[in-house]
Length: 210
Image (tube, rainbow, N blue to C red; front, top):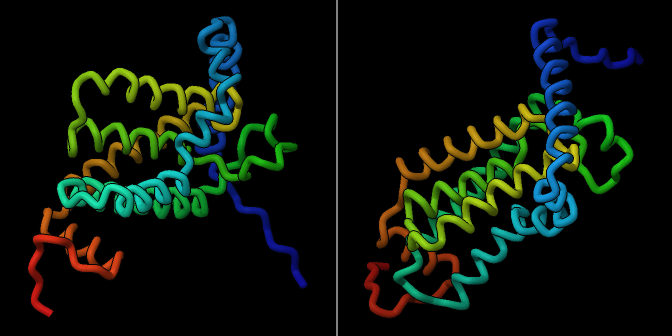
């Protein structure tokens, strides 16, 4: 059997990736001079879990059952769709690009091997966009939400889990997801019907023809 040939990467892309790797290393070395940025490495695992795709999906579904509040169904269903869209797009893009993580993570069994784009950066950006533009939270919630999103992306960079380009692509992807969900934002009645279908029980006050 013939061995599978290694994928040929165009020279222009190789140069871009080489510059990206160099800039990533230079930026991380510079950022490690500052205590408040170094502290993000200490809290990396907590930040990573706080933006985990499965955790967000499971929590969102669980809160639909716990709160059982029809006023929240529109937000919860649209957020759920956005989170699922994010997972699909990140998986597809990683499968297409197959960019490896920085060399310092080669021996880290807990880190998935594909790097581009950053799923945590895209998810954090989408969540911020959602609660900033699609279902606006009170103004007082904005600073901690933005700080969380920044910390998630920056910690992935400082831990050398991603290159700069991976993070920027993740931010761009998350913004695109927010725009797309905003365009297709489901109305209250549709979301209530979906919750009824998921929970297999009739929502009080809602009427459906069956």
